[in-house]
Amino acid sequence: MSENEKLLRAALRKIAEFDFDSGCGVDDIMAFADLAWRGELDPEEVISLLSDDARSLPVDAPVDALLVVGKTCELSVPVSPDVAERKEPTRYRLPRERSGWTHHFTILAVENGQPVSVDGYITVNTYEDGKPGEIFVKMERQGSQASGFIDAFAVSMSMLLQLGVPLVTLLNKFENMRFEPSGRIEGSSTLALSPVDYVCKYLRGKFCK
View 1 (tube, rainbow, N blue to C red):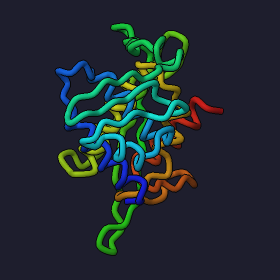
View 2 (tube, rainbow, N blue to C red):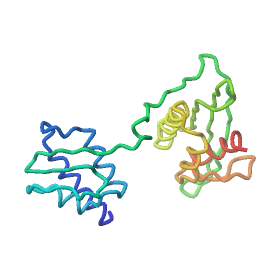
View 3 (spheres, rainbow, N blue to C red):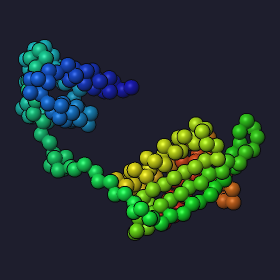
View 4 (cartoon, one colour):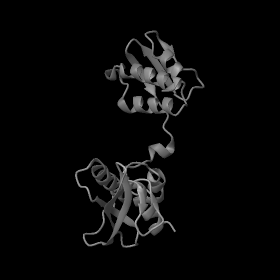
């Protein structure tokens, strides 16, 4: 943990002691914490301000006003227009009847010095425009740790796609993740660093050409 993170954690502990009945709302606290986290407010300054003595924020500080006396506060944080206009994400579900396909793959892995073949299945369902909106991944070894993780990964991918997160953004985050089983894909020169890595490489090849 960096020194700056330690200072910020200490500052947030101070924030947690605020008396919310004094008019200092949860949204104010969250906005204040966000400013500190993004580096627009020095954590050391936060700790200094949130003392038992009455203090006021410098005029040129990013927060309009902060006055702390004991455990009471008065806080007003300017919210940027893009944040103020931000709406809750809308989930676009797939139609009841949707197009899709299932892709079978086999990872030629090695376990305990012995070659093993691990089969998996990727099912992709798409919107009317052909964009992916739902992904299912099933591994041969149901109930294993890797299989459970893959199921959770596929559900997360599906939810994020339906909430409008671009596929390429998700692939850039998850591709090259390493864990077993890993190995070359049967019938292909593709090297899978993990089942998640292969799912990402497969989706990139299908949708990001």
